[in-house]
Length: 93
Image (cartoon, rainbow, N blue to C red; front, side, top):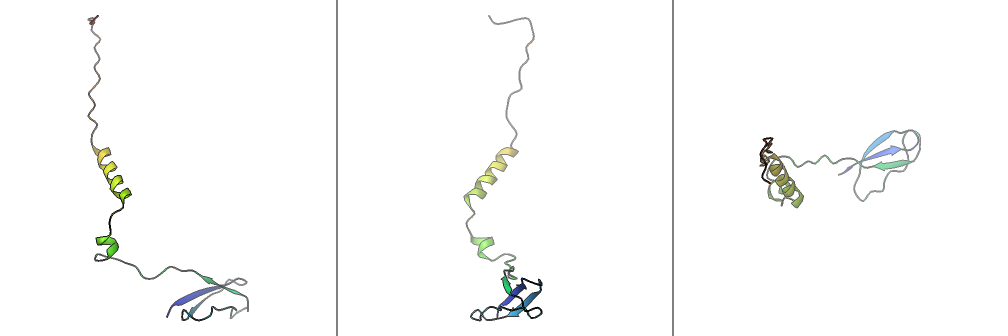
């Protein structure tokens, strides 16, 4: 059964309630009889480790592949020739 959280709009009290999905949401605060609003909370379910589709079998996005290629290219040294400084008096006119 899911655990829902509600917050009172008047006193700020947070309440938790184990409810079926089909149950009606709570309306009144138990402390001050103010109105409640349902909070959206994070899921406690987390995919960790290997063996999940996300980590092992999903296709890598095109942006990941291009960003990896750019990183490898930027690490390569530039092959620019050194500039020549010929300050000798001879010129090829």
